[in-house]
Image (cartoon, rainbow, N blue to C red; front, side, top):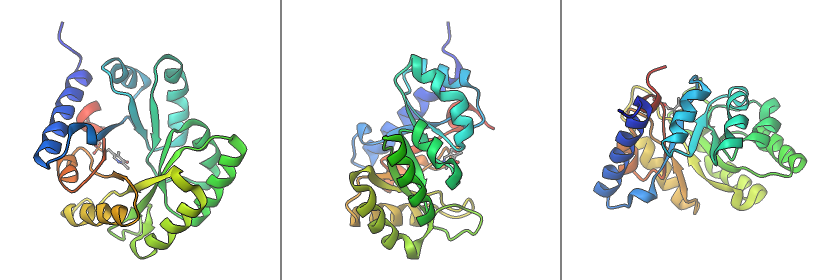
Length: 221
Ligand SMILES: *Cc1c(COP(=O)(O)O)cnc(C)c1O
């Protein structure tokens, strides 16, 4: 029997990650694949879980809450919220997510701190930076990043693990990736989440430790 397309796609992406890491003088185990399952049904996530994938990304808290609690009862998995987060969704995000990659403003930091206290549960946090200064995109402005990172370090301690970005669609991502990796290093943050289906190998060459890959695994949306 042929493996299903999701299994095959996962293998292919994992091979490409390993090769990109080795080419960059790093180990394949230095890069974690976050499989982005937004808009895809729970069956697609279950297929990926059956193929051994354990780390998943979702944009929307409500969609994640509809899919993941049931799967979590059957499989060990890690759920990342990667999309812009409304403050009124902070509590549910803290309840269901292992990682929130999209902390991007003081108001959201306030809401997350309250939610963490109420839920008695602290997800790993990444700060999203709007490296391309795109008005429609979430992410803290570049110029405000250092101050916000320091505030969040004071507030969340070691739960603050790193930085995330989504570069502008129509630009060379390299300067954005390099800037983010440098910023993380400067702040002593180990995790750098960058790179999607179209550019994850470039991101790995620039120092990504997490890549968020959706369509190359689950097909186009
Ligand atoms: C959808 C999404 C991805 C994955 O995008 P693909 O191009 O499908 O790999 C990664 N990161 C974020 C923030 C996303 O919204």
